[in-house]
Image (cartoon, rainbow, N blue to C red):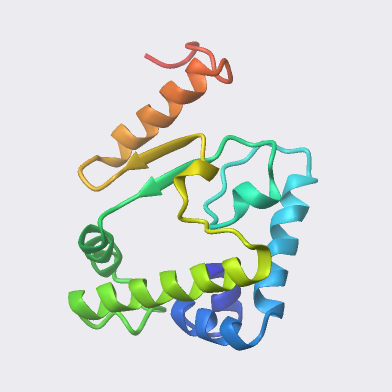
Length: 153
């Protein structure tokens, strides 16, 4: 979605608002996701509905407390996300985007992407470093026999 927003000269929140009235946005994202699934390549994807369109995948939900998410987004200083003028505005923008996407996906597909039952692993990243998150994911993959210990110290 970030790529599509950039292609259109919009922020993600602006594109989400357009998508509320124009379902072709979400369907284009879905099509792009499905093409990846058919590529035969291994990849890591950051997507709200990737698990739905790529059912034979390992599905990880990275959760975070809203105030932590906002601090991370605001701290990243993404110039394309101009609604993030301060921390409180960022909290509001994230909440609006989440609600917009949740309602659309329920309407389109009858699924709530925030339901942890859809995922193989749920990690609250609020108090973890990126390396700790990766380690939890790799441990999960190792437990499932999908990665070996070779090359991991």
